[in-house]
Structures are given as structure tokens and as C-alpha cells.
Image 1 (tube, rainbow, N blue to C red):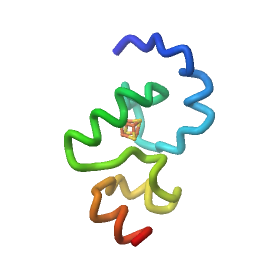
Image 2: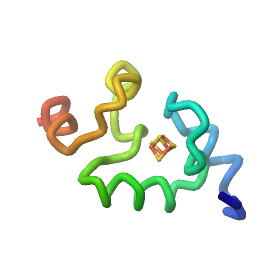
Image 3: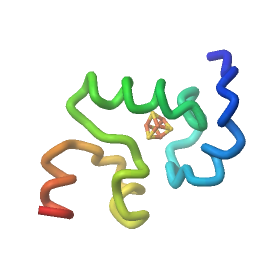
Image 4: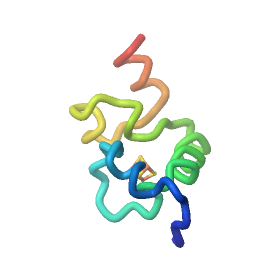
Length: 66
Ligand code: SF4
């Protein structure tokens, strides 16, 4: 996936996603669209310890923050 976002480098500084090789990394618009379609949220919505489980569901978000 071509990334031409002007914020790409800055986005990567704040990205806590540990999923290897994801083409959406650093392209937050694409990342959030990808996850919302699946009723999920991006990695950055979760604490690091939860992020690394790759459970990005709304239910998990509510479990963590509800
Ligand atoms: S949160 Fe999901 S879409 Fe975004 S970079 Fe990580 S694995 Fe890719």
C-alpha cells in the first residue's frame, strides 16, 4: 500500500501497534477504517499490554475502560 500521508513519520512515533508487517501502520486513516469495518478499534486505543493480544474488539475496549 502506498503511503503518502504528510503525517506518516509523526504517526509512527505515536503508534504502539506490534502487529508485524501491517500495511496500515503510520497511515491512521487507513488503520481506523480497517478496524471499524470489523467492529474493532486501532492498537493505539488500548494499553500496550492489551494491544499485544491483538484483541481490538469493542468488547475488549469496554472491558478495559468500562
Ligand atoms: S492497529 Fe491494526 S491496522 Fe493499525 S497498524 Fe496495527 S494491525 Fe495495522
